[in-house]
Image (cartoon, rainbow, N blue to C red; front, side, top):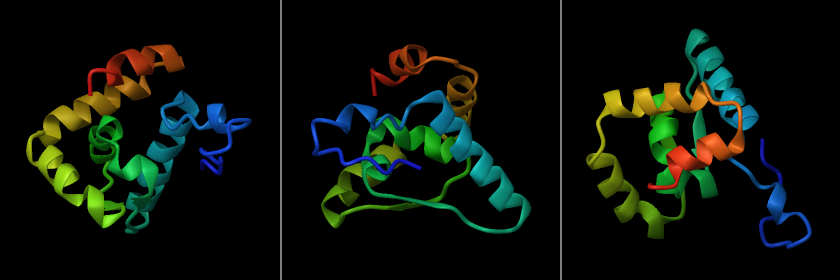
Length: 109
């Protein structure tokens, strides 16, 4: 979904994993996969950023792939959240129509 070179300053600003369209697309992919008895995994940057993990878990993603150096922090973060809270956060984010609304919710994480 996000084929942007984050290290290229000319296009890095387009890397917006919290854009409403991206979040809704992820939710649709997971819903479709679930209906077809398939798993969805998220790899890379979004998978290890704690600001996104609750959303990903809340929409049903259970497979996160990342560099091993991030595993301790991610495991700790996941152990501290409830699935009900993650699902509530996901519903809240999916109801928003702007990047600024979503950013204001995610910023504290």
